[in-house]
Every structure is written in structure tokens, then in C-alpha cells.
Amino acid sequence: MKKLTPREIVAALDKYIISQNDAKRSVAIALRNRWRRRQVPEDLRDEIAPKNIILIGPTGVGKTEIARRLARLADSPFLKIEASKFTEVGYVGRDVESMVRDLTELAVSMVKSKEQEAVKAKARTIAEERMLDILLPPKKEPEPSEGTEGEETTLELVRKDAIEPPSTREKIRKMLRSGKLDNRYVDLEVAERNMPVVEIFSSVGLEEMDINIKDMFGSMFPKKTKKRKVKVPEAIEILTNEEAQRLVDMDKVVKEAITKVEETGIIFLDEIDKITGREGSHGPDVSREGVQRDLLPIVEGCTVATKYGMVKTDHILFIASGAFHVTKPSDLVPELQGRFPIRVELKSLGKEDFIRILTEPKNALRLQYEALLKTEDITLVFEDDAISAIAEIATEVNARTENIGARRLHTVMERLLDEILFDAPDVAAQKIVIDAKYVYDKLEGIKEDVDLSRYIL
Image 1 (cartoon, rainbow, N blue to C red):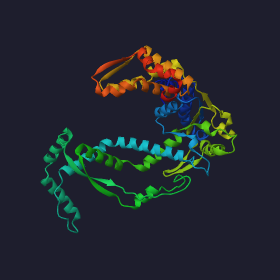
Image 2: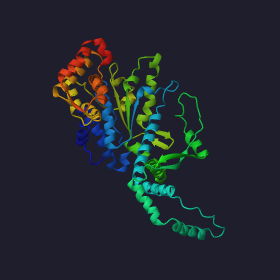
Image 3: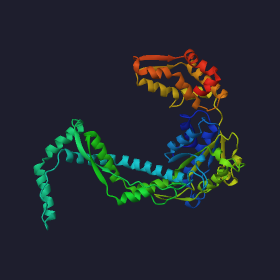
Image 4: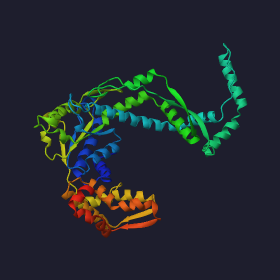
């Protein structure tokens, strides 16, 4: 984080997201402010609240992608959730606190994976020793007599060395490492946990219960093991994962994960405009203002009980988004408005933006299709005029039907390459060039038929 200036954050986002510079600047400043907050004196640090953001714009213009890429850039726990999933108490839906629990669960998984990766080399060494024990089991010795336990144990080790010379074990180790035993099967005992089924019927399910039922019952019932016959490489992988889990200190993982959530967590509240209407007093509108009031304490800063402990939400960054076609941010309840001080409008995408989306990003749609067909030994080449034609058709269809932004490119490209993708496994390796004529021949008829294009494009 220290190395990432706002300018560098914007440059990193530019690799994947076209246009929307105002939104990129806003999230870059918000991310940098997190680092700045950690540098200020401790007595003032807790007073600095994150500046939450509302991204306003139609679907498919990059709102979610900006938030997701920002989280990857900062290595932060990131959760995307639709605000419309939440309802006030009494209506079927999710409890608002569940998003903090889900974010904590994600953070624990992130930190645990990193810790396991850090100890993987050590875990593999232990797994290799266990595999050698399976391939070359030591000869069982008689039980030691009472009173001479220490002496017998030492004697057992001496006898084991005599029975199993180091050279034999080392020879098998070399064979194992060189892959000569890869096709051999071994019997492996793996843990099997048969959990009793517990069903609880309530409006919010298990989300309001502080005690985790699965963990509680999991510690009460003994672990069962079952034998599996697997090849040596798979067995080593299973044993490595088992040992990595044993080597990881879960108390440390949980502590670090909670800190990660509280200091760097990002929650993306999509479709916040769906809970903005306040004028309705019947039907689905009845719970909208209630949802906003339920969200308020979470965004404002409170403490949420999770199965890993208490998590404070004071410094979690909330990025909300919505199209706001029929409502506006000022329709939110005043308290919630105050918690989203930064508002950025994202512009609709046009033909030039689509051309750039198809060619510039590191994950450009054109590159994705070229890579997919490369697996079938087909070289797909898009001429410049073809890219322009695809962008033009996508723009026209968006204007005549529903504007779904850059997602329209997916439907157009899929329809354009339908035959090539279907026939690819059955044809010889070849080079296929897509030009403007091919694009118009393939799509012009569908584009002209408005009724048909509503269904197909």
C-alpha cells in the first residue's frame, strides 16, 4: 500500500477498465487515505472515518469492476452484495449483519491460504516422510515392558535402523522425487466428518445465532476415517494439505483476518437505488426505508458478532452503486446520505469506448476468444475494421433496445463467433480472419430485425 500513490492506482485500474476517470480518481484517493490514516498519531487514527462512495451509472459501465480490481490491488477482503437482498425484520430476506460475517469468512480463508502457502515446503517434507512410511512400513516391534519405556523406545529406533537401512529409504525417496512411482497406487486414510443434519426454521435462518452449530457438533463427534486408493502424486498432495493445516496457527489466522476486515475490508453494495424509494407504503416498497435504517448502523460503525469474534465496521470502506433511473441519491434517508459523502457519475459507453474495451485491456474480450480458440489450434485474427463494426453494432443495439453497457459486447461476440466455436474441434488447424464484411454478413439481419435483436443481441 505504501508504494501505491493515487496516480499509480489509477494507472493500474486503466489496464482493465476503460474510461470512467472520475470514478477511478475517487476510489484511488479513498484507498490512499487508508494508508494515510495508519500513519497519523494513534489518538487521532480512530477519529478518521472512511469516505464512502456512491457510483452512479447504468449497468455495464464498470462500477463493479472498479471496486473488484481495487480490492485485488490492495489485497483487501472484498464482498459484493445486492442491497435488495436485505429486508427489515419481519420480511423474508437476509440480515444486514450477515455481510460482515461473510466478509470475515472471506478474510479468514484469504489469510489461511497465505499461511498454508508459507508452510507448504515444510508440509511437503513431512508429507514425503509419511509417504515413505506408507511405501516402506517399519517392522512392528513388541510392546515395551513397564518401567523401561525410555530404554525400549531407543532400542526400537536402533532396531528400526538395522531392519531398514537408510540406503533403502533414500533409494525410494529418489524414485519418489524422480516420478518413477507416480503410477503406483497406495491406500490412504483420509478424515471423513459425517455431520448430523440440523434444520432450523426461522425468518433469518442461522444468521442471528452466535453459536455455530456445525462447529459445536463437529467437536462432539469423533472424526471418522476412510480408506482411499489413490496414485502416489495425489496421495502426496492430500498429505501435504493435511500437514499444512496442522502447521497453521488458526488463532493467529483469525486475529490477522479480523484486523484485515476492520482496517482494509471493502463491501460493494450493488443496486442501492432499489431500496431508495420512500414514497410507497404498500407492496414491496413497504420495507425500503426499513432496509436503509438497518444498513445505517453497519455503515456508520458498529460491532458485529461473528463466529470468529467481534468485528468492528467503523473503518470498512463501503462502495455503493446504482443506476438511479427513477430515484436519486438524495432520496436516501438523510443519515445514510451523510455516510456516503463522495458521489461519482459514470458515463454511458459509446462506440469509441467499445473499440478500446475490445483491444486495450489486459483481459480484452478479443484476447479471450483468441486464447480460447488457440487451444483448438485455430488462430483467430480480428481486423481493425471488424473491431469497429462490432463496436458500432453493439452501440446501435444498446440504443434501440436496453442499454446494458459493455455486457452487450459479450452477446454480440458470442453470436458472431457461434459457428467457429461450434465447429472448431472438427476442423484442421487454420488461421481465421474476421473482417468487417464477415461481421455485417453475420449480424446485419439480426440487428435490422428489432424484435429478433431483443432476444438474440
